[in-house]
Length: 508
Image (tube, rainbow, N blue to C red; front, top):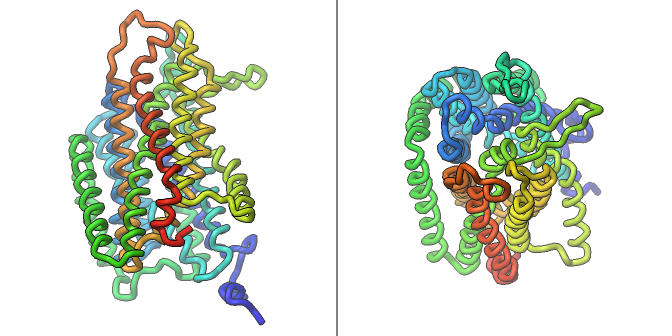
């Protein structure tokens, strides 16, 4: 007699490696979309400083506002796909808008450039949340292949994130015709990197469009929403949203205020709802709110990667050089380290959790969150230790920064894979959409907070004659609070994890 699990797999379904063919269409479409996003993300702060003469502090806040808005708009993009366009048309429209935004970044005019960033924000809001949802729709409830399917999809994300900084940084140098008279090296023209990122997005759209038949009708618009009119209305709505996002990028402080109000309103609503509910629902919402706050603390620390740590890599690292290959590691290459470590260490951690679970020693979700916070703090502790050995030029060996990324990636693997699953399990059944929105808003708040930390690192005045560790004073003053905040919060959460786990009432 076939099991329920076996019956959940269609016997006549065309597959590749045992998975629906549509998974690999989405794999490559997402790979190229992430190539686009992480390629331009790795260059953004450098370009703002070089092209528009922004201070590192100002560039940090623009970066923080941009990445915060990218996550915040994902909440609305999911709603549009659910109620209006369907997932496939939302993904296509979002991808087209993102590509337009990337090519707009080629402009030397700051206003046009910021409009390009605003356009990417709107497009990403339609694309990113919906392609992940579409992966889930390829599998029926109870299909045992679902988890491994998402693992394969996650590898596509990280492969794109790994390749993008490497190629976008190098084409920015290969295409440049300006030579630094001091180093005799090409001065990067990051506009070419943005152009390559835009081409990556177009490739993703081509893959998605050409392979639509492999999706077997999944992700179509609701029957009453098919036709050109809903698409036209959403497109017009996106056009209206672009100047709104542009104005928020100009008035960066208002992004923090808006996120604070939105996050506070969602948190208060969930708290009031929980207090009025029966005991299990109340306890689970209290646990959820606590873990959302910890999520903000983790990502506000972790997301220094594309911001202050990116600038640190450019100015204060002796980069790895392999003479026999005539290869030198560029500052932007550090943006690829986390992605490749995810690919390498992800299966190791997955096997570790399974092994610990068999022996009854698998840490609970709150304990894993605590371990993640401790590790993200210790990563900065390692870098601060390395900064004490800086030479007279204020530079340290590349291994210290690489070590930080190893520890941070280990922390990410303790938190990120369980986060979304935890949200859907703790949320009351009729509030899953709102709670998922709260998760993305928490990440948006974290990205804005990360920008403020990076601003502080870039705004601390340093004596002109400072040498060695003294030349790194701004980073010391910015990273030390992150170290103590993350480690202290992580230790407290780890100690209290049994109590928090009881509030979750069996959710694992």
